[in-house]
Length: 315
Image (cartoon, rainbow, N blue to C red):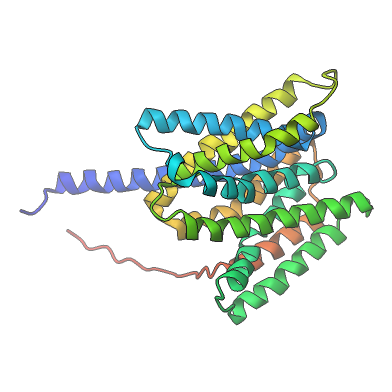
């Protein structure tokens, strides 16, 4: 039976609403993940990198586990506890701590831009681990990515000190860790719901960091501020727990390929938050470096631009 004109209009409005919600979720996710570099930049000098990340993953794990319990879903802890430790190290404890250490010397905006190299190193991990050949396009993307980092760092107003160079290297190493995490997750968590994986990896990271946190626990609380405490809470609840819920919403609704476009938005928001809240300077080198690095991500990710022309029929 043919739908009435009224029903067709309502269906069209519903599809439009879904597209609007998905677009809002995409920009919301980019804004939250971009803000993580702001919060780390504020909290890390006060609490130290390890305690900052301990707070992030512990609070995030608690929030995600509560959500799992409320939604009646399983954590698969008995079946996957060993794998949660490994993915927790590769996708949270190691990269988060490296980024937090780098944040002692790098502005939030630069950290956000360097983090966008993750797809580049993921492609290399797939090439080395999975023996998947890299196309000419991806090799070109690699060269462009190296050029982008060179422009970002070399054309920067930051002093060219040993600490800054080490911080840049740590930021790049964090993206390599993310690359290994992505491949490991694909091989080891088939059939495990994404939300369970998110909660399990934060729990695993929290357990792994505990010994290091006790060793590096601050001896004085005089430097602790309300802003620093709220930064860790925001980092855990908004930039991790809620961000993961948005991420999985997008994966389910629009698919992984379109969700990947968040990679292009995160450094933009990272620069915006750093400039607005921390008065970080947006230099020409930073903007050019960002454009070149995102160009390399475009090449590495096999993103193809297509123009679609849709002809509307008169009913």
